[in-house]
Image (tube, rainbow, N blue to C red; front, side, top):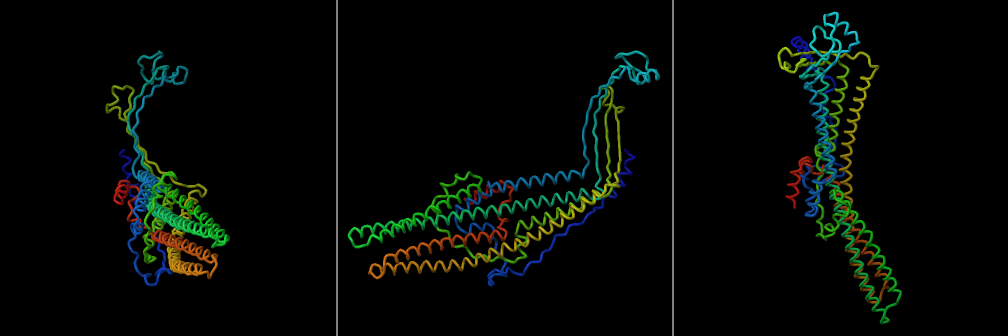
Length: 504
């Protein structure tokens, strides 16, 4: 073993070299402000959007989000991938150290009487007897030998050119990428839960409007039928009113079905069967407040707030480290192997100093000719690093586009909503005026029906616009990063339980 020390020292002296490219975080040019932002707030920093869904001031929504963060399958999948990445990191780190194994054995061998070794034993004075008695020299033909052994062996491939160091760097970056992907899964899940809940509330609002219209149309039909019996109203007015009522009744079914579909979606997002939450989600809730105005902040800050951008940057770091691993394979490999054993033919003296047997080996492997295999692997890793870089750039541009799209949708929907709300008021006033003229005998009842239908249509469109405004705000919050820093980390189940308890 002492003779291995100079070789060990030489290899250790070379171990400071790390081949392959060193990683540098990419820089991305971003505009000074978002083009679709309100000029009055475009240069303002983004507010703290942690727990942004609580701005709707709906305890039921807060409860659903907390359950989703605890039980959502997307979160559990992302958490499992974090554990997988961490296990791979531990595997790569283990290559820094020797691999040590304990071994023990018992061997028995019986010499053949008909093999050449019998003659060799005779030549060295082994005698001619056969059987199981004591032997001398090499051993008698037909005798049995027993050997006991106990010890350990260690092997170590020295990381001379940094291949292991690069592999550990890549594994660490992939752990961080998995953690950011889990954060992105949280942001996406919260946004999906809030969006489904808002669509459910919209469907319930539209259902209420439709049922109110059915009730109103039913009352009108009853009044018309009573008036017709006195001979003061033509029968064709009753027929038109009955047709109007049928249209109102037919409008109820689709919005009911849409609401049930959103209940099913919410249940699945919370890891429940689709029918598990119909009863509790059918309970009427107070009207949601209007969504608040939110400045988007600066585009340069978006790169730090978006988990998917952070994950893409870590994937680029891992791909860069993989290039170093491949480059290290172009260089020689150095390994050290040692074995210490106790070996004896008798169990009684196995643990004596005379039974000690030592073996040591130092080896080097030099790649000479592989017909381009290793170089091809390096080229593959470089191409994969380029791919990761372009994927990062694409993720950054997509993040910027998501904010711009959300801003323009939100702004135009706000303008549309203002027009629709004014239209509802005008339509209601028009109905009142036309009904007064009808009672005075100045217009036909058809004009009243048309005006009432216009009110129903305007109210329904205004309700849809209110729901769309809330959904557009969800898209903006998600595009801005979703406030992941206010959400417990995916792997911290205890924190998630405390979070849900605090919000109930």
